[in-house]
Length: 174
Image (cartoon, rainbow, N blue to C red; front, side, top):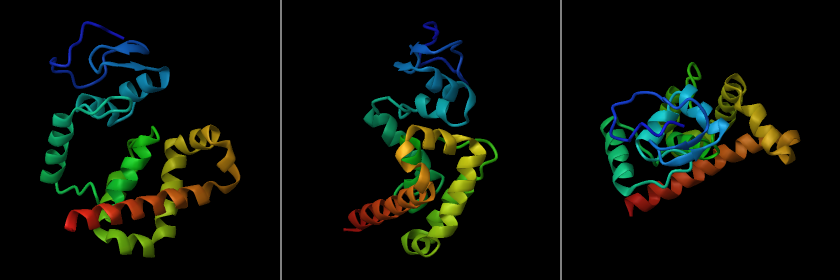
């Protein structure tokens, strides 16, 4: 990784030639993380905003990101946003052509109850998107116990996001 960059430089994409310690983002990036930073939409921006994988979020960076999202009408506590956050924490992100952002927005509009009513539709979306993006196979490879029940695991991922969203929204309104 290049040590010539600093986080103050106006860079719009990864400039590091290989895996290693990234001076810009202040983390050690494996081959996989370097590939995500340089090739997959969204990851470079996550690291730039201080909330990328393996980064310790700076409170000011998290606050700034939430303010930007609120300005765009994004509710981080809604089911679609929570599901996207959980998937990102597993190391996967939005890829070009996956329609993830529109699915997240749709789930957010449906809310907790609407997502519960449409859970099979959401699992179908997730399975198709994951297969198209190529992370479904990596997910199964990294979790061999779930190979036979992969759809069940995806359903559990969606159910967890709905439960987490419900708890967050309840806490916010009390």
